[in-house]
Length: 130
Length: 130
Length: 130
Image (cartoon, rainbow over all chains, first blue to last red; front, top):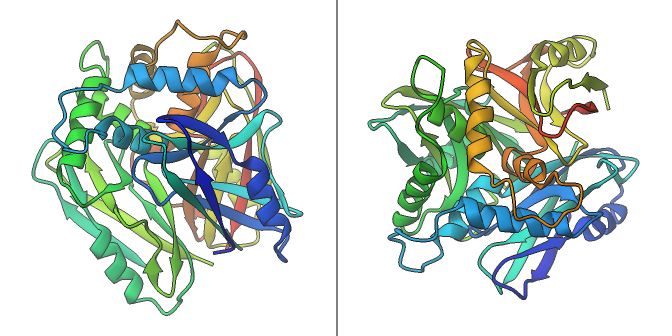
């Protein structure tokens, strides 16, 4: 593992832009080209790439997911089944190409940690592969 | 390919924990660190990471997906379009970091093969990359 | 990067089979085995693997997604929030194993570029890793 990002979410549901923290972790590495693997070791959180220009986009994604995922009729006693469903829909891992130590992202893209059952202390594991 | 896991699903929809089978495949390898790639070569199945402590979580995910995905109004004559939709929502591939031959998963995480159109004989392809 | 596929979508929503274009890019490489990384540098598009035998399958997936994702109640002024939601649900990246320069896909699988806010000029970035 090249780095572990620690995230302290403050709300029940929250989309946190971690692009610059990932870029910094990358800058500290010796290798310049490869595949960056981002992994969320939690089952009620996820990671996604989407627009980081207008903050309303991630807000709308949260609102959309809230309408898409049912909120009742579940058995799991912790009561956070909607968060588990969102985690599997969005996904716990991402891969991004690295060239010259830079994340190869599109103009409007950022990497977001998705908290679906906060507030909690969370982690994102970063590994780098040839 | 380092291994192919064969899965015999027994129900129309089923979430099968394959974590220990993947870990065993990894143990048989010589290389100790890298990126594990898991791939489902089917279009009505998927692979996801979620909680493997309380079995109600995967049951609730199945119930949630059943409510999310429409069940009628489709053209595909095989009648399994909802299964194709679930496959693209959850995804056919996953990557997990490997350190010292161990899958780097969070405390509550397991890897699940998702059958959306069973019962069938299925496969998961495992490859290992530097 | 080993290649960049340029795609000109012609409709608001469109699912374009890019399997043969990816296979061609792979054929032009020297390396024969590895992990292919496909990345969509856009926030209102995605990439998925699903059936490419019956075109009704991708049509039904589009119809299903249209029913799943809400179409109103958003703040983002461009009016394309449903497209951003679909992008995060389906995902902007994919990994596929390569053996002997061939994409390791199942019998019925193809790789689809998913346009959710066209018509536009789009790209898919292809990288190859050990």
